[in-house]
Image (cartoon, rainbow, N blue to C red; front, side, top):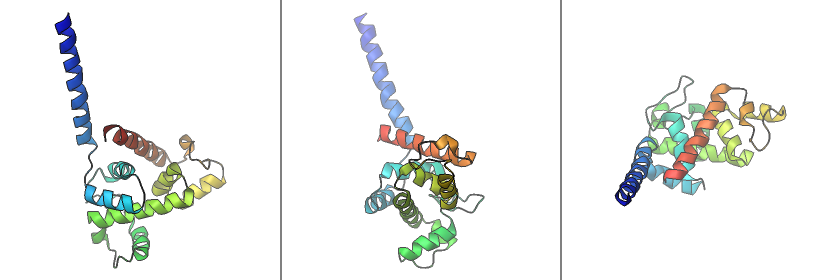
Length: 177
């Protein structure tokens, strides 16, 4: 009986170790040199940034959405040009947005701007996907509360699922890293 318990404990330990390793493959920390650098600069949790990248592009730097969002953090060209001007990055083009460092820097800066505007992670995540105009309307109409806790009320199912995905990714990243 004692041997059985020891073997069972060893099997459980191996399973726990493998689970973390498998999850780290599914939830990687790619482009860490840029994520860590700019997350620190803009005082964001890098694990949240990885969560956004995972949901937006699954770490595919060449990703482009049907709506025209580009790169790892799926930034719209017009948004990137506006943020790029503030950051003194010249001539932001679609091609430049495929460059991981530029895309991550602009995406993090944009997310930080949203966080400063709404002072709430859930609201910043909603605005990152649905846009500030939609979020402002939902806040004005009382569809979304000012704490962003009632995400089930989000009228766009894509945005509702997006927010849930980011929060789930973030929880997993926190557990494994």
